[in-house]
Length: 175
Image 1: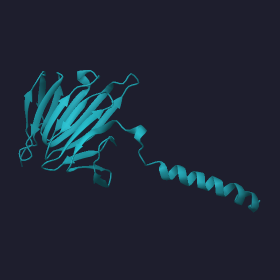
Image 2: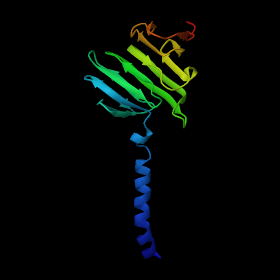
Image 3: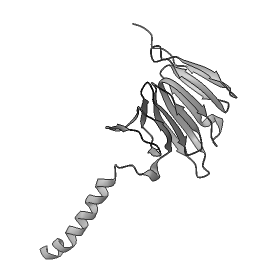
Image 4: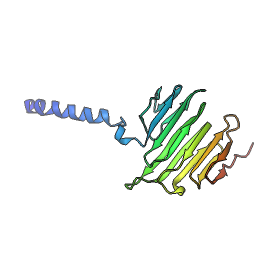
């Protein structure tokens, strides 16, 4: 019996170890976006891994993109939405729920501070949500630029062919 367990057990143990070991690793097939253009001074944080961002790198839900004073990242999402993270900026990819038809039923990013350019893709406008520290920008058009002031955390925008709405977050009552 112990000989049978030793013969079967080793390959089975190896298979279980390989399966468990790779369970937490995201693959390019799981990505929801690609960093199609990267100027120097751009980095990314996913989980506890902080690294320099390179062109054509896969991006994932929960990943943060940060740029230095001269950095810039052009992001292409799975639904063909395009976003530019400008110099001195930070963006968190919060939640992108893709449908089989290549559109997103939910698309949420958080602009933490800096400059951005946003161009909608194939998804319905109601799916898009750009969160800031002080509110949410609802997308109702096709493209626009905006700035989230790193000191006040308030967004300011300049619109090309777009309309948008801004819903401020309720501020907690002071004590």
